[in-house]
Length: 111
Image (cartoon, rainbow, N blue to C red; front, top):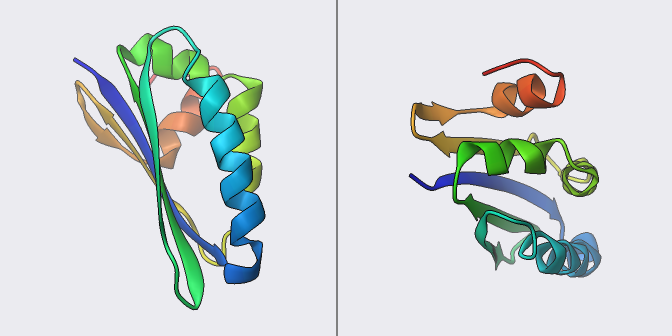
């Protein structure tokens, strides 16, 4: 069963162009990773720019490898520019999890 990571956050409108460009560059490299089924980015412009970024993976082990990668650290840096706390969701065969899943995987735990 495919797995999915979705991140939603808002950034200042003035920073949206550079953040979207960084996300597009990240998506190009992520799509070449083994097990990646695809990446999607949508934006909603307003007082703040709303970003919704999704990655789909063939298996949970592929997603875990992604979470431990340097490229995930780059995504986390972009999320730090949010105007409010980002919402992150991991859709896995065993259910839906939040940020604690990524923290556990990156910390060496076994969710």
